[in-house]
Length: 231
Image (cartoon, rainbow, N blue to C red; front, top):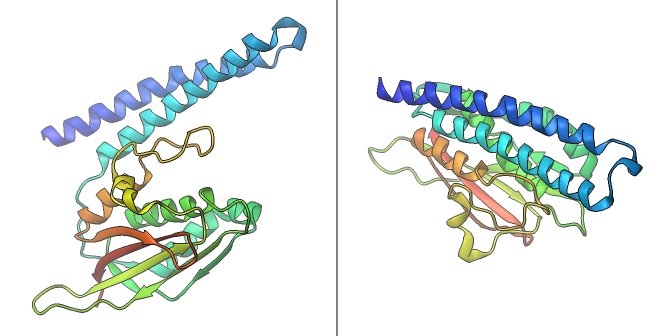
C-alpha cells in the first residue's frame, strides 16, 4: 500500500507542478513575441532563459513521476520485439527523416517482458542514437541479435545489440551514463534531463534482464540488452 500511495503522490505532484510551469512558459513566450521596441535585447534574452528553464522544470517533474512509477513488471508476457521496433520507428519517423538516418533492424523474435516498458527502452536507445549523432555524417543505427550461451538451470536468454555511429561515450563513463541525471554534455547542446538511460536500466533489471554499453565498431556506441527468451 505504501508503494501505491507513493506513486499516487508523485503523479499528483507532477500534474500539480506541470500546470503552473506550463502556464509560466506560455506567458514567457507571449511576452517574448512582443514587438522588438517593447523590450531591449538583454531583457528578451533573460526572458528566453527563464522560459527554457521553466520548460526544463516541467519536463523534470514528469520524468521524476514516470521514474518513480516504474515497478517490477511480470515477465510472463510474450512480447514481439519486431513489432516493438516497428512501433518505435513509426514514433521516431520524423527525426529519422530529418537527420537522414539509416535504421536497419534484423528479425528479433519474442521475449518475456512487458510490451509498453520494452517499447520505452528501445525508444530511448534509438532516440539517443539520433540525438547524439556525429555532425559530420548521417546516423546509422543497427539493431540485431547476439548469441548468448545458455547456462544449465538458468532461463534461456536473448541479447539485442543497438549500435550507432554517433559521437560515442567515453569508456570511463560507461557506468555513469546509467545513473539518474547523468549528463555528459551541456544541456544547450543536447536537450534532456538525464533520466533516459537510468529509466532503461530500471525497466530492464525489473524484467530480470541486463543492459550495458561499450564502444561501437564505428566509433559510436553499442548497447546490449539481455532479456528472457520466449519459448
